[in-house]
Image 1 (cartoon, rainbow, N blue to C red):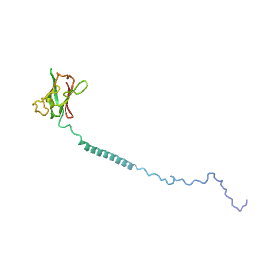
Image 2 (tube, rainbow, N blue to C red):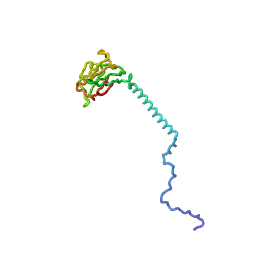
Image 3 (spheres, rainbow, N blue to C red):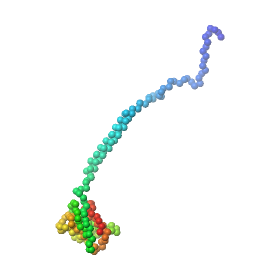
Image 4 (tube, rainbow, N blue to C red):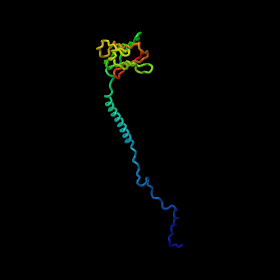
Length: 187
């Protein structure tokens, strides 16, 4: 070695894995951290949605109530049933009218009697109006309290059903006014 030359630095052996990696970013390039969660805003949104749902439900209920309330009627002017006292004499079954809470025209009030064995309609009289039963039909006769000129059902009117025909105990009687059943019972 010669004294005039400075010593040569020692060279490092080549690395097997290549150059060192570049500085690592906390997130990949083009990726930004998500915004911080704001719990107050989420709670506000949830409350607003719930209030909106409740309001929509109330408004729809009110609309339906208004639409349907006109369709629903009350029970009308009092009870629609009549009171009948049933009597059994040696020759007739007698149905005496004891209460009539509202008026019922004899032309729309009907009498219907069914056989107990198969519920078929006893014919005659079939389904007859009380007006037509002022004249006896098939052993059934309606007697208005004030006479044949009477036009509506009244207390003390009487319907008789003759026992001289094939009618039997257990026959079902129905008295109606239109679609309203006023009384039903059995002989």
